[in-house]
Length: 69
Image 1 (cartoon, rainbow, N blue to C red):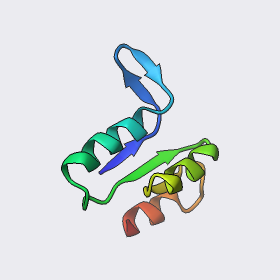
Image 2: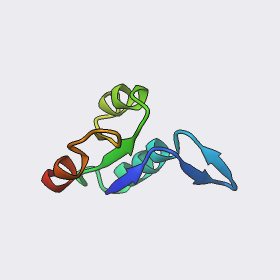
Image 3: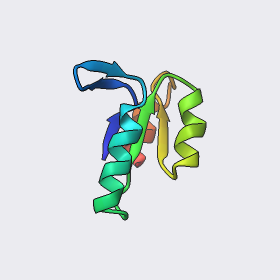
Image 4: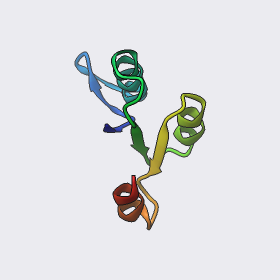
């Protein structure tokens, strides 16, 4: 699964919605690879703590890294 970290949820912009989505998906399918993308570097460490892959949207290697994933 590939998701942005920030997206609208419940009618409002949620800066951590991707983490909530990943947690819900992991509850049903713990083996599914999940990558979250964001331009906020703080989300990289948060993703690692949650056992998720992370892609920096501002990286010049973004597309290459996404293809590898």
